[in-house]
Length: 141
Image (tube, rainbow, N blue to C red; front, side, top):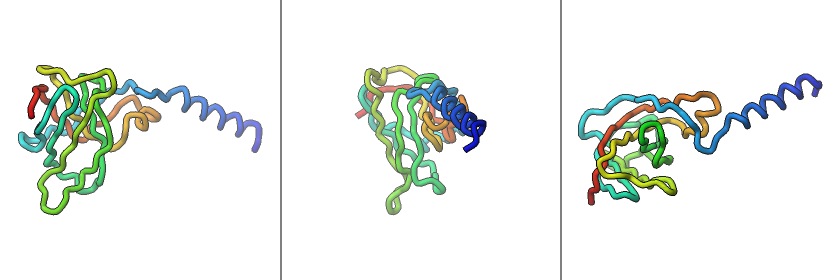
């Protein structure tokens, strides 16, 4: 490897390492709002929330789901979007990150995207939500 090529490769690796953050600071852009009834909260407590999602993501077998407090992820993870049999919906149960909890009366957003935030931060500071669902948290059993 030529010295200049090696130096360029080393610089690229260092730049990539310096931009990575375990908890990226991204702007989560609003996605398409779904009609009422397409996403509902079926169970909710301070320690977990379950959504029933009727949006058809036929092209994707799994997507990244985030519950956001403003621009801060409270809960997140990959979930399968495939429906079993004749099911009209799939369910997602999210738990808040350590040290956080869902608060009654607070407004949150469910953001569904193609990638996890750690992957997006390597190329952008903007996270595009495909679908957005804004809700006010209330305990529900």
